[in-house]
Length: 267
Image (cartoon, rainbow, N blue to C red; front, side):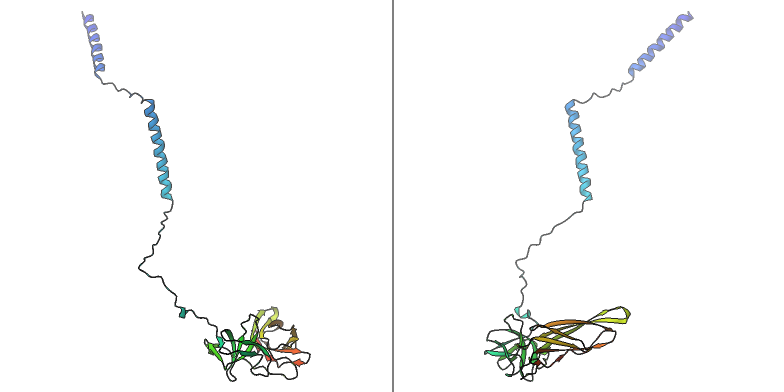
């Protein structure tokens, strides 16, 4: 009898367990999406990744803003006052044809002429004799002395240097040149010496020279061909030495009055 009861108990227990298991809700994995849905999701993922990378790349680039200004038609453009645009050169014109000579009188050779309407640059003056040293406007590079009787000077004549008056020579020797510039350049050498480089520029006032002669205060002499208007020479001298030079035009009949450069000295 007891054995029968135990059998029924075991069977009953098994049935209860089965009922309980059947009552527990089961979790089922969702079915896989159809192939076309899976393809759409893959494309969207690729596009999202591309847009993300593009946005990150744009954030790392500098931002350049170009602004184009549109002029205001109510604002007038600036204009240049012609009176404010002036040349620093002093110029001269004449009211009548005027001869230009190698010196400030009729005793000097005629070099050229200036006519009404022509404009020439003034490079020197002789206010005592009323003469102006000018550059001929014919692009020849020649300079000459112009009588100021019929002349009108434009510009600040006070800035024009006084010109040394050449001497008229009656024996056929050339007229002295007009020294326009004398410059010294110093180069420090070893042993306390300096290289003196003298650079000369002048106006050729004669038409019959066959050379120009440059004499140094140290006793050295140099010469150039005719019609030259510049020359330079070098000498190596101790520091503090005073050096000067003279310039003259010469031919077979003699030399003109020499023109001095003044004294030069390197430190």
